Length: 284
Image (cartoon, rainbow, N blue to C red; front, side, top):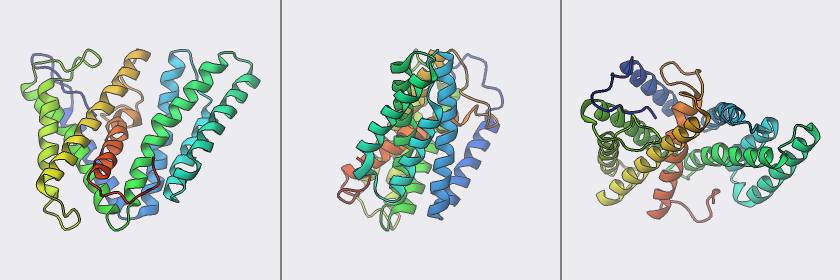
């Protein structure tokens, strides 16, 4: 999610380009939603890209991940969720990840065995588990494609309007973790996402009263903004501005999709809260 600078600070260079790139990524993602296997592959690719950058952040702090172990576990999260098996094998997956990461760290002889295996497990949960919520949303019977598109739109609107409103009228810093973000920008993103959630209740797939749509929009927006702050904290801890440079105007994969990691979880939780998730659906 892109930072919303405080009024009086120098405007972020090239912000229209960032908006256009963000919209373009959203359009591509929405197009792939209509083809479930393609969307699963997209989620896997994003997760691996984000994991690579997370590993680089950890390495800067001196605690490297066991990257091959983490990558295999992240892919397992996506695949097991896609085949509706994650609820059955998640415990085994996490235990195996920890044991194998500890073993590979010990055999590498580089020291910091507990730290390396702990960072590996954290990376798998942060990237793999959170990404799997989007796969689970897409797999909801009858509602999956429409629900996934709504989640993407709500998060994209939160990102865009938090930045635009913050640049126009932002004055109050939101957090010391990311001083360029403002309370006004956060409220702007929240308001637009809430209104979009209400508007979604008019679509044929949702069949919900307006207040449920408002809650879905608000919860998703709050989750998206929390995800942005978490990634800002990780970058601040590693003393870097961007997690990577892969996406023009946005930094790295993690910079672009940080809000989607927590936003997908929040959207899934909101649907569960409204009774729209079938009992025992794939993700705990």
